[in-house]
Amino acid sequence: MIRRLAVSVVGCLLLAGCSTSHPSTTSTTRPVPRTTTSTVLPSTTGAPSTTAPSTTTTTAPGMIKVDVPMAGATVASPFVLSGSANVYEAALNAELTTSGGTVLSDAAFQATAGTGTWGTYSTSISYPAGHAGPATLTVFSISAKDGSRINQVVVPVTLR
Image (cartoon, rainbow, N blue to C red):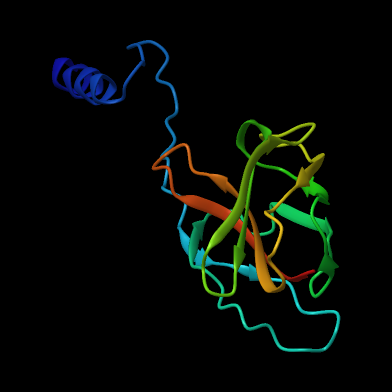
């Protein structure tokens, strides 16, 4: 009897937070698998995109939607970027680059809601005069864990 009680007490002590009279249940937390993804919106003009997608790490693909501009759209400075997102603290970023990789504009802005709730966003993107031709608009969030780009959406556009 004493041995059975000792085994019970030792077993209970191994389970964090339980008492000898009411052992509690425990759960095991498993890490979420991380995948490498990138979303490249197809061109609406039928022309293939000349922009190679950047690689980003995300655990929840499809958390940023871009409504405007549509892939393949021709834009002039300034233009409106809008859509919806469900990202940590509603924090979003956008970067406009030339086909040669020169950054013309970068912006940080917020959606109307985030962290488990879909919100909308709308911001103005400007770029310096004198730039025309193919470009890439990249919308993404920043990982709170390691500062990397996550939930990235790449939209090919043409500057005029």
